[in-house]
Image 1 (cartoon, rainbow, N blue to C red):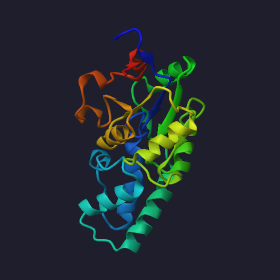
Image 2 (image 1 turned 180 degrees about the vertical axis):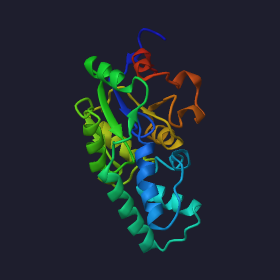
Image 3 (image 1 turned 120 degrees about the horizontal axis):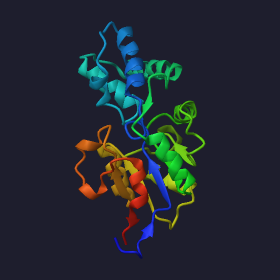
Image 4 (image 1 turned 30 degrees about the horizontal axis):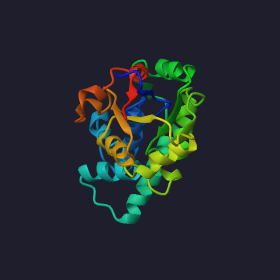
Amino acid sequence: MSEHLKQYDAFIFDLDGTLINSAPDIAAAMNRVLADFGQGSLSTSEIERFIGFGSERLVADVLDICGLSMTREQLKEAVIQYNQYYNESPATLTTFYPNVKEDLEMLAQKGYKLGVCTNKNHKLTQTVLRLLGIDNLIDVAIGADAVTRCKPDPLHLIEVAKRMSLNGKPWAYIGDTPVDQQTAEQAGVTFFAVPWGGGSELKINEQYRLSRLSDLTTFRKEP
């Protein structure tokens, strides 16, 4: 790329499926809900495909594929129960994707501002970041219930950037799902896809695919 192109000042990341593989803990909590309804357990891979849209959508979708018809009140109670189970053990089985923690540390050391924009519950997001030991690397992290409209509404992502004081500065969003990609496009910012989570299935120009997060240091903002 041309030398005059600006290096990015900051990167905002999705959380689940992008920085961390939280599917095992989410599946464990969801299976406890299914057990409450007398249902058998689903595999982590069966539940994983519903992650990324928030807990209400996750619970509704999983109960639906199990053939469980719920009233609005019953679904509300099921979501409350799921959140309670997940809050009890939000990072027991959760792991980082390859080199993620090391690369986040490197990016922070190089002076990049780092943020998180996730459809996970806000308080739970802070807890998970702390339990995994990366809360000190993240400047701003905002969960779905801390904004009036969450992803794929661009307001969510823009709010993270606003609190990071990124107005007028070059930054990008990194994720693994169509929701992440759509959010970035609607916010008018560059989107990069990780190779794990659902990232490999995204329809995106190959130049915006990462092999690991450290690749981000090689990119420059196009005019």
